Amino acid sequence: MRVLLTVEMDTDKANAAIRDNRLGQVVQSTLEALKPEAVYFGAHNGKRTGFFVFDLADLSDIPTIAEPFFQELGAGIDVIPVMDFTEVQKGLQKFGAR
Image (cartoon, rainbow, N blue to C red):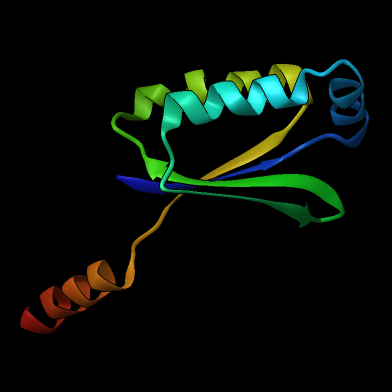
């Protein structure tokens, strides 16, 4: 299932991770594990935020993905199922056929 993982980092913990050169390590290990199709970084709600689009193979993988962000960066996360336009069209066709 394709999902959008939004990681909103605690400012103080992210600042400390930047000073300690840990922020890059946390993100890099996540990129290696997830192999995302897209990754973006910006500010959301006034906080450093990462947006990762990837295939979530199993719901039981969520703790493995989330815990480094919780523990290292004090982050809040959201995991949202998402579709591309082709998938939306397919879903609408199924809806129309019922």
